[in-house]
Length: 353
Image 1 (cartoon, helix red, strand yellow):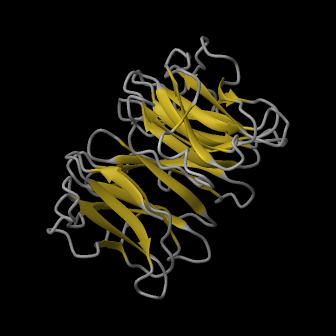
Image 2 (tube, helix red, strand yellow; image 1 turned 90 degrees about the horizontal axis):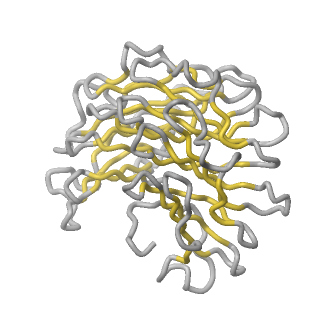
Image 3 (tube, helix red, strand yellow; image 1 turned 120 degrees about the vertical axis):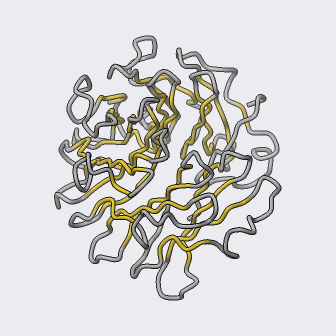
């Protein structure tokens, strides 16, 4: 379960779950230099960020803007549920002593808190979001601010700000910076009781949800059948482009759609209601990931079954909703026989995509 973030100098910091203790998994990190060499200033085989009891799995990571990183993970040290913890590792490979040993607690509520993900706050800290079963009836979406020094922001509610407490489950939040210290968070949402839809909300740097947005989030897509597997990039103007896998065709397969949400809390009126189709090719297109195109748009990559076995395809969509050339196979990957399936992790893009 490795996760990676840039060090700002051509290298990367990588975090992972580690079973070296033969008891349960812990969280470690390592620095890879731009030369492809492991940083000799860091411990061989990685710096331990958390070796507490219980399982620590699925770490998420974000750069701190100073060559280090903040890492968050679901943590089983307080059974029976999972909590969320985080740790800051400096560029030198030293764990930040202003943070709690073995990780600062982000959320320690009853039942499970799962799927944390992070975005930098622009000031050396991060905003983290997750789905949360503290109610004991369904999963909701929460967020918390981690300061660069000292862990959780005491100006935010303890154990996180509720972003969505609508009926039924809300799952797998993803977020991007709004460019002003806050974040736009998207997720897939079962509040209709019929199928999953796509929603988003804006949390301010103060820790309050944006009152200009609808309570419990703005609907980006409420088309028939399931919309899931959301991915998000900033649009450079405080808003975001959200893409997802979409079963509205009712054929039992998924297509790829995207929508543009404005900082004002409205869906971009220049885009189609319920999203712009990126790919409606035969068979399924699933597990999208996305990256900014550097001009307010997005490049989306997904696993694609149109040829009978999963290949990788990509599409570019501009901020104003126009698509690039027809979605293209990723050369040198998709042309290989047999499967190239699984979760894509997009780290960069090339001009030919």
